[in-house]
Image 1 (tube, helix red, strand yellow):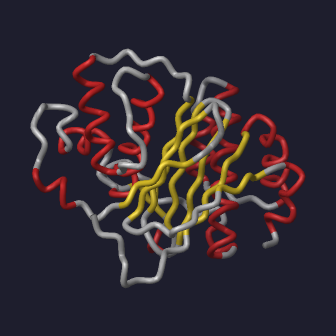
Image 2: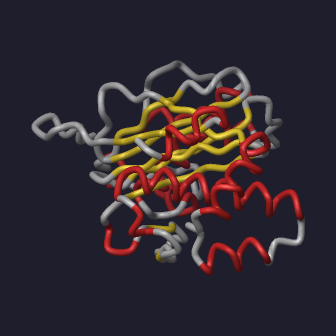
Length: 239
């Protein structure tokens, strides 16, 4: 693992958003200052489930606000580019972002220095996975981050390993399916090249209801998770 010991630590900001409580506030801000691209609006409009559409729009508005804090208003209404893996990226590469949306909450990471990935899951999610697949997920997750001893018998531990893999796949821009194959979770044979990955992965503390992880080529020693909240949105917008 390359940790970038001779490089300055990258600037990465991570934000947690309760989409249910923030949706109206975020939509009001969007009405005042449009940031969503035409592609964003059309994608949301195509969603048949009204609640899913509402929460998706809120997550995308919050993501664009977080990016604007880093690079200014030039990204407003600019369409993201989509890589072959499906990862959305900022045109020109001036900033990087990752978003994970599960249920009514979202986790967003932004950086001007390195490609970044985050993933978030509910800790009480029930897994339907064979014992062998569980062991493979735990082993692969442990290769990327050995911050805690995990048990394949516990759903929450398997989820901890899973979000590590998802975050790594997003940061690498290769898609989770390819990473699972390379790590031997799917297909049974782990490629030796996977051991040489220049990626760092870290578990994030989001409270008891969720498990999460962040990944990037380099991670700063300290990573604080900020909350985008109704009471502080105006201050957040003008930092």
